[in-house]
Structure formats: C-alpha cells, structure tokens
Image (cartoon, rainbow, N blue to C red; front, side, top):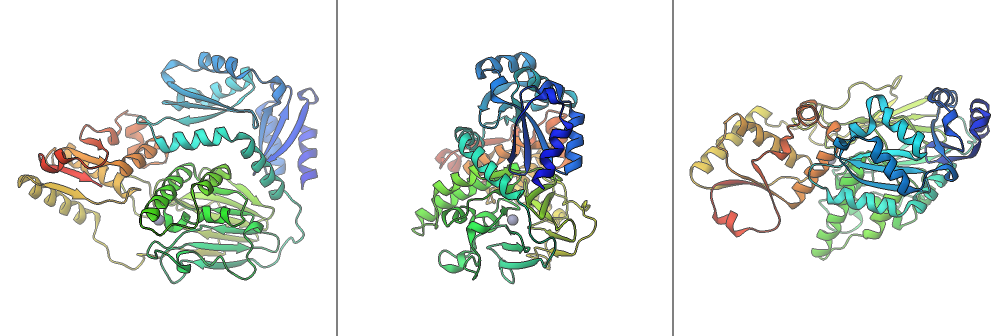
Length: 497
Ligand SMILES: [Zn+2]
C-alpha cells in the first residue's frame, strides 16, 4: 500500500516541484516540496482520488518565510475587518495558525486568500475562530498544542506509519465487545476488533459510582492490551463517554484520539473539572492533569462527513448526533466495505433550538449492525411546548412575588438551550425582562459554543453569522463569578447555575 501511495505521488507531481519528503501524518499524507508553486490543486486532487487518501501539499522548511516576515505578509493579505488576534507557527508541520474574529474573511471567497497566504509565505494556514468573549479553555488548549509542536508532529508520524502498515488478513470476523454501558447506564466503551486491528469507541466513567471497579469500563478483559489499540474514538464530551480517556494514557495507550474540534475542547474542560471535584470529595480519579495534556498532543480532530483511515482496514466517518455541541455518530467502514457498523453514541432526532437534529442520511452503502444508545428510549417525556409553558408560568409567578428563579442546568447543552429559550421568551414579552445571571462553567461552555457557530442549529447559526445578532450576547445575560450577596438579596432575577 505504501509503495503504491509513494509511486503515485512521484508519477503525478511535476519534477520541478522537487519532493523533499513524504510523511504519513496521522491519516493524512503530507508531501513536502521545495517548489509548491508548480503543483496545482488538480494534481493534488487526482492523486488523492487515485490512492483514496487525503493529501496535503506543504513547503519544505528551507523555502518557508521567516515567521516574522510571514506574519507581516499575512496581515497585508487579510483585510483588517477579519480582526486577526493571534498568529502561531508550527515549524515541525509547516503550519501557521491564524486566529481571527471573522475567519471567513481570512479564508476569502472559495479559499482564495488561503491559497495566497500559502503561495506567498509557504506556510500552510490553519484558521480558527476567536469567539466574541474569550474562551480560556480554547486559548489554553491551542497554546499548549502549539508549545508542543515537536511532540505532536512525532506522534502524528508514528500514528501515520501504523495506520498505513501492510495487513496480513484481507477479511475475517469482526468482533464487537461491550466493555461498558451494556444493560447499564454510564461508562460507555465498545471494542471493535478485526484480525488486524482494534479500535475503542468511547471510554467513559460511571458517574453514579464514586469509586471502585464499576467506575471504569471493563478494561481488564483477558487479552486487551491498551498499547495495542489502534485508535480511540470519542463521540462526545460527556464524562460517561470520555471521562476515562486520560486513564488509557496513564496505563499504556500512546495512540490517537479522534474527536470533533468542540469535543476536544469541552472534553478537556470536563475532565479537568471532574479531577477538581473528585479531589475535593476526597475520591481522586485514577489520572491527573498530566494525562489530560498528553491526550491533547495525541488528538486528531475531524469534521462531520470526513472519511478517515484509523487503521489499515478501518475507515471512520463522523455524523452529527444532535445531542450536544460536537457530538457525533460514528460509521465504521471495515475491510473495504465488507462490514459496515454504526455506533450512535448519545443522539437526538428531535430538533432543539441549539442544534440541528441528528443526521438521517449516511454515505454508507448499507449497515450490517447498529450499536445504539437507548437510555430514555422508552420513557415518556413532557413535550417541549408543555415544558416551556410551565417555565413561563413559573418565571412570571416568581418574579411577580419579587423572587428569584434558580434554574439548575447541566453546563453543556442544557445551559445554552435554556439561554436561547429565555432570550426568545423575553424578546416576545412572554416573560418579564429581568436580569439573567450566568455562572462560571455555563459561561465558559457558552464561549466555546460561540467559537463553533457553524455547528449550531440553522436558526442560531444564521442569527450569528448572517444577521450578526448573537443570542448568547443578549443584553439580558450577565456573567458572574462565585457567590454574590447583592444578587441573592436584590431585585427579581433568573440565575442559571
Ligand atoms: Zn451524553
């Protein structure tokens, strides 16, 4: 397979491009050349199609502009309205991270500015949105990743070599083993094995168990060796699906973690927070912040719909699961399509204000098995309309009596959904316009939502990107840290905590 890939690249790339190196960087193949100007996108596309891999054209270090000069060139190319807030260089991967408030203006129509940046600086641009209110989490994560570029590049190349190794068995049985969340709630983990490879879908903890072996999935399975896993794939950032990923790194795993970008951010925040809480409760978790950082340098982020090789005989594709920001269902395409599996993780087919409903069309030719989450599957729940009118009544009654409405919310998803509901009700004058106080964790997670508006529901996305009316920045919302006596004793208000 490797020989085929390399010879296809050499056959199609013009000789004058002067190939210096071909690196397997995780699932992508990076071709470093001295003269990228002579390689047009058509050539790259042709090779990608021929070998069914993702190809990235990069410039060799020798021809890249000095970072200082490159920054100046970028600032000259990008219109000031884009509001660039940070530029970081990754010399090991030849990439430049450009953080801007209006990323669309950095990309340009049809990616024209990106091409221009690459042509003039020879650095491959990676664009990130800076949310209107800074997210500490995203800032810390990006700073950390860009301070560990050597480590990350080394990891990607190790993963790449492993993914593109030659296989012995072309077919053979595929085994699915439930390590957690089967006939129980919590500690989700599913092991998928082929004769060549093994991947783990989710590694959650059981939130109802404080300590002991029921906290973990059954990683003590006889022949399961963590260092032999090819990939860990995480569907979303709730701890019952991701809470034990750092633990894997502590006990021998050294491979990639595949997630969507928001899942990477929220997952790290949730893990660090749960370490804090567990410590305070006197029941420390079996890992530390060190493993959370290790997880970050081993993370590969994927978009929905992006087909990715994670093992020599397994490709995966993420689809929107409609559950929380960044949540994904995973389609596994095994042994050239001989076996197709879908693992849903937590999913939702009803629309919410915050998110579009889960994807209902896969590009899979067929599915041989579906591993489906069923918690709440058979429960009758109050309809949205009923719940909202109950909320309206409660808020009205409480405010009229001069009281405060305390709404306890989960920081991820529910908090933002309630914010959208309250903002809409106030806009329509269905409830009195009183101040709404948002506390620490809900606030920070909302900032992360604001960094990924393209992954929110169509309505919210349009409000933010087209109308420039971000509902999360509504005048009704007030951010607070810690306890505030004046709010507790003050005028009627609504508090989300
Ligand atoms: Zn969940």
